[in-house]
Length: 184
Image 1 (tube, rainbow, N blue to C red):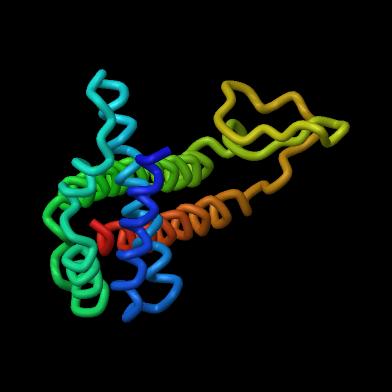
Image 2: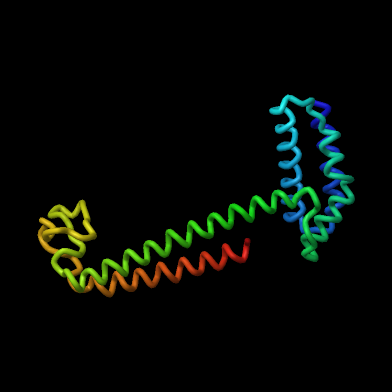
């Protein structure tokens, strides 16, 4: 219980020094610091070391210095405090992975839509959108023979719809990639 009291006291002091920030920003900083503290405690516990909250808090530094660093980071864009650069690197790595995965996914879908639109021009009877008689199933794609359903739903409208959908997917993908790149 003493460990939690020490942590609580540290966070109360930190909260007092973060008073210059907006209340929601100060709460976010406190939650972030608290999660880092408890992550460090858990890591000590799992590695078989003696759990020592005071040693962990010393690693964070004095509450006033930590608060000043965070206030400068939030208000002036100063770099994060020294111990938090590793966390920032992990965040950037995850964002980069998400960036490339999103690019591959979005552009692959767009390519597939363009490809099916082009194939509809070349093989109009084998490419399209069909519905089963009861309307509970929908088939879109290439078939060696015409799909054994009543009739094709879109006909030649498949080409502009697939092309427009591909352009829409490309536009959305590029916008998402721009947002992700800004956060890298």
